[in-house]
Amino acid sequence: MKPPLLLIGQGSNDDADSAEFGRFVHRLRCRLDQRAADVSGGYLERATPRLSESVASLVARGHHRLVALPLSLSRVGEEWPAALEAEARRHPTLMYDYGRPLGPDPRVLALLAERLKDAATEMPRLRPLEAVGGRYRQLRAVDTPPDYQPGHVEPGETAVVLVGEGSTDPAANAEVHRVSRLFWETHAYDFMTVETAFVSVTPPGVPGGLERCRRLGAKRVIVVPYLLFAGGVLERVWAQALAYGAGHPDLDIRCAEVIGDCDTLADVVIDRYEEALQLA
Image (cartoon, rainbow, N blue to C red; front, top):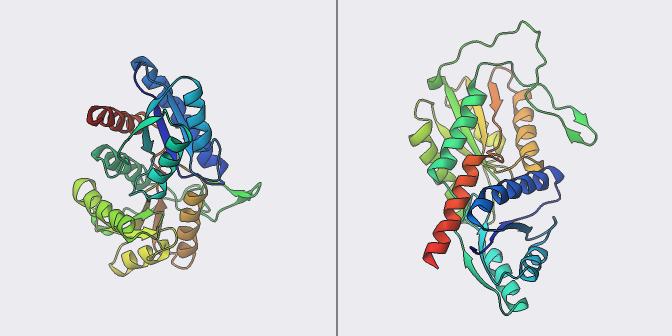
């Protein structure tokens, strides 16, 4: 039997993010069951199960070697390997191999291109967010008449804003800028530009990215979240885009979906798992 795969998430207080993380762990468990490998998932903070609980469960089931993989698109901080070192001290018989983050894998970029294509499809424009039960509904509903038809906009008149979470680590922020350039040259070369923005912590924010596109002459801007799963961070992206759009009604602003739980993303994770085993 192969060593189990342990997916590590940052963790948040958002139930939607945790639910999609859980569904993705289940997808991988079903996929790797054919290869006789167990799959578990744990968070560094805030959400459950915590990393320590998942490791303890694997050890209790007789596993003393595992492959740990940070489920992250960007460069991870020192707290990730430090957390694993702490678990190794807590369980002296435990050995682990550390896999690479997902990063701008070509398949991840292809998934972003699919989300961009879906958002670029001619459709009615955004309407204000509607609060329901303390959360916000889908952003891309309409506030226009049923017979409204948006004017045709060429790709060369359309700009893209790739939005990362934002970090205090300059290298992590630089990586998002690198992804924007890779995405433009490999999947979005017909568009006017691909600009970079961040949800928080570091500039430019989503409004700053949209403003740059407007000043470049874009008639339409598509916001593409560089995020794995839906949740509170995605809602903040949508809310910032909508707030900017309210002051610029002549600019057609679209918001794409996150990468999400899917088989292609699972393929990337499984390849990282096999790579870590080969390098061990």
